[in-house]
Image (tube, rainbow, N blue to C red; front, top):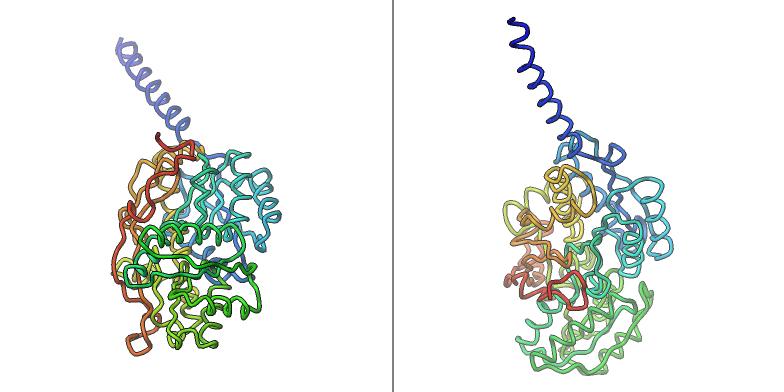
Length: 407
């Protein structure tokens, strides 16, 4: 009798527990039983210092800090060198998604390479986060549910730097612009800010990426008599332009340079005697507060240099991605992306961060000025923070050209 009485409740409980376990297993799904993150970067070329091994290290730090597993499955990193060539980047991305079952590709310096990789991500329906490319097309006319832009865009840098310089009397500009998508986008956005604030753009020259001799371009900028020479370029052209301008006496003659993109590794390479006084906008500065210092010192211990905003952004995005997998119970790309948009991003990298519906991560930026040698008190003490710029002001509203943006 007792056997009969107790058999049924225990059977029901067992069935219920089994159903719950089956339901949990069904919800917690990781494709191929591993979450694989590909760092696709420039390992040896001109963009390798601000990205490269530093981005790989940042991604691995995020995985280690997360515990090495998500939903009980291991997390691994794979590294590729696209050599700053769009066809090589696209080929690696295709192989990673198709053969190596990579779930997420990160970093990818140079906009032309990033846009090529974004096309592959769209085709393969896999996730891609760009950190070291700023063309607004990523979240504008080429926006995608599978691709995110995490650290900056050219509009945000232009709003911070160009607007502030015009306010300070720098109302005539001549641009030295890298002749590829990123440089063109940076010049376009900065020009719009300059004219909107009452300034004039007197002209521009467009050296190819990684041009060894920039003398003729500097001379043309000097001859323009513009108060401000705007550097619409990234590494290595931006550093060489500042250095060459100093050698040609541009600063002594009264012209100033505004770096629309400059990284802390650029300033380190130039040295404070050459770079002092530059105004620039950045998403991250290692010495901003206790949180930035704590993480940056751990990073420094591994590479013996402080991180760029791009490298810090890689860590931030990987942690946010892994947390989204944990909360979604799956590594399904669109479900994870939706989770990433749900949660605010408030970490050592981002203040008031939010992944918007167009997959642009908006967050506060800083306008900084490079210190003089006398003002710098210890190694890598390079920036004076002049003001904070809200993400809403810096990035502006979603581009209507993006089909993901709310109309």
